[in-house]
Length: 352
Image (cartoon, rainbow, N blue to C red; front, side):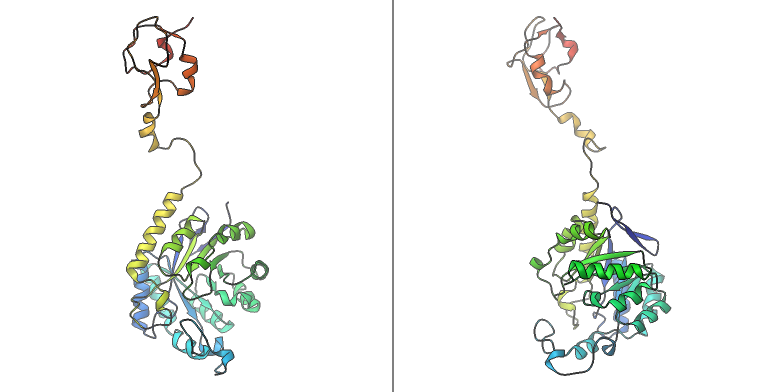
């Protein structure tokens, strides 16, 4: 089904356009600016189309409270308060214009997920070409409205959202003036179990909202993004790290550069294989067309002999008349001597 497309830096993203592959840096900079620069460069080297940052501070996301309400109790970050986690993970804002310049210089898109209005204003000054709404922020309707007011393309991760919550976010964005919206299917679990990805949601989202749909993948490995593309995903977002041996809150579910490159290669192969709806012969098939079956004489015949199942068969190759005419040929007489291995043509049949 054909849906709308969005456009980032002149690149059309949607049905029948190449998959847009986003390398999510998240916390994998490990508070090291040079490492962040290398991640941007490496994302470009391994074939990503864009790098995505996150623009927040601990104080724009939460407050410094040690109660159990603000503490992770399970998973990768068990025991950490939200404030401590975001203090470790956030990227200093002063780095981000510099990283944008690095990305511009090497020809890779760079944009970010803002988490409050001050982040949106900051990213506007950077002239980011698009915005990403994180899955947990899909319910922050005032934030989505403010982002949409900038008129840039918006990519929204759906995460745990219900269809009604997705619709509300989309309608608010449209009402605030943005016309280019894409959705990402994702699981808001880190790392995400493969069995909880439910990728069949991708075509359903596209059908329901008539928008480009992709996947934000937090599973381990590269299988899920490739399957998502086969199901119609036109955007793939995946975390990139220089090495999972480098301490980072996100390293456990991030791909190393070699793995990311293999994912890109597999996606490009998959989208080529998907092609389009087509039946019949294409340019390559034409070379094999004559290996189809057709009617041949399989025993020497004299003029006047009757065509029977003993001397006529449907065999390869395809130089004789179509096998559908076998019943029409049987019972007819040969109009001339016919050597075994001769493809049958109508000219060889004596019409009575």
